[in-house]
Image (cartoon, rainbow over all chains, first blue to last red; front, side, top):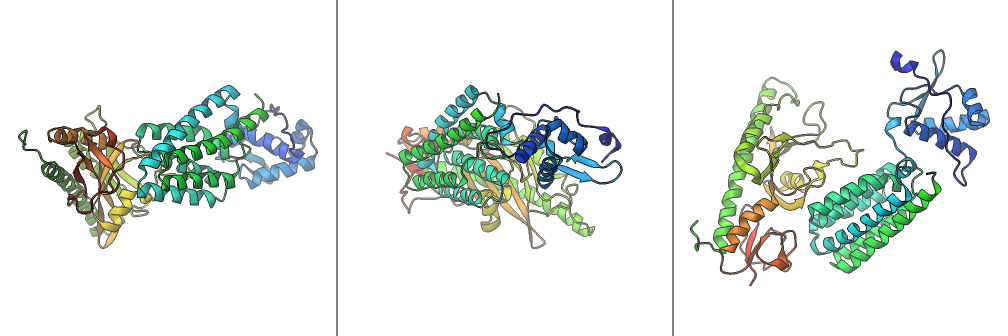
Length: 249
Length: 233
């Protein structure tokens, strides 16, 4: 760490966010700190206030704070150094990680509903066309994507595999415009859907949705593919909208 | 070709000639690559991005001659062939609206949503496994975002597979050219690839991108392309 970065101290008072229903105190403190990092309120390389100060500021016991910091360390968001000039520092990569909640809060409920309406319309059209047009290579890739999705070890891998499945489904529609649209939707919605503290979509149900779409493509049934895609989009949209309602404006 | 002389066979023959000429382009790029890898071997050095930097000039020069039918061309290296560069595409695109070709901005970070995993792409795998290949039309979602047909050849240097030389044809532009030829026929027809995907057509029910099924196994197929020109009346 450079001298310049060492000098950065986190702001004395952080605008902490309202607790979420059902969160433990430790989880709440950890989430508030994570979001402060994601939002850049705690800049990369900056030193967090001392444990005593931070605990007091957040109105929690030293024990709760220490547990929350341990969870941040496990996630690689902070690193703690002992000795003179020591303390807890925000890791280099941490600021670039965005949680599902942070991404979702960027949309008002109206904007999100509008985005999901658009995505739903496109997704259904893509699936119908893919049922007519998918070739052997298209289907092979989609199966591989869904396998990768089912085997994903963490939220980020799941997000990437799911985004890839949906973009490859668009590729199977052999329309470059629809593919371009789907790439944009995945860029916007895959984070809120899969990243930590996002919509917490159910991976098992989602994989079953992929399988239903794939089965319809293999049967070459545009009706079944469109219906399966609509079901999948609806369940994702419901999870996203439900989660958005839980988050502050 | 004089009007009136167009037949299903001449349309396919012309395409085979065009594609053959484009494979010559790839051969030239491949020989340029080998020459540079030879130089590195002779100096007992592992090839680096620096070794192959001269390929950019070759690719740009050739692309300038090709017009807008060719969307781009380049060399995609097998993983870890170049020192310090686990994945590398020396790829130049030829934008529709500009004569100057440009390097393609692609993402090789596997953590990124737009990660361009070319090693898994059909044109890369087919070239590696089967040799010279014609793949598509397909939408290149993580590369150029265009609807393209890719011609690819494997590069094997000192017995080692080092990568693939390939070029992309704009499917729409090729389709337009072929459609002009198909219009001269006295019947309605379509150009399809080996799996029956329509590249060009004069039949509204079978537009480019759609799939024709139950193709006659005995149909004539182009030697290099695997494509067929079918009468649909």
